[in-house]
Image (cartoon, rainbow, N blue to C red; front, side, top):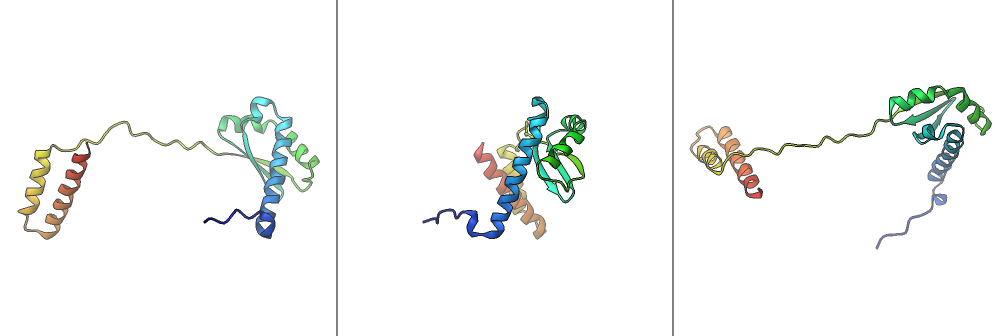
Length: 146
């Protein structure tokens, strides 16, 4: 039986990280409030790192638009209890594009697979015999799955 999740309060390190995350989420909400709505929805995260506020967006287009608001963002962050901040940096987190395979592998015909297996049996070189046998076995398995 699984043990229930323990709140972060029992673990001081986790509690501290949770506190930092909550502070930065509140800061993000305040920053988004001064931006135009269509721009605010593209600001994904903000992270305070020393004297720098880093904003993350998903494309260079939004990044360039956000740069026009850097001073306003910095002033809002300073007002929001982050007086140590001196600059704003904007970074792009591109969406992960998973390539789709549009073509299916072309497997050899059953006759050619049998020929590979037969060639493996008649081969004198042990390495080549083993390699051809494995290839024939793999192709036979894949051919059965079609």
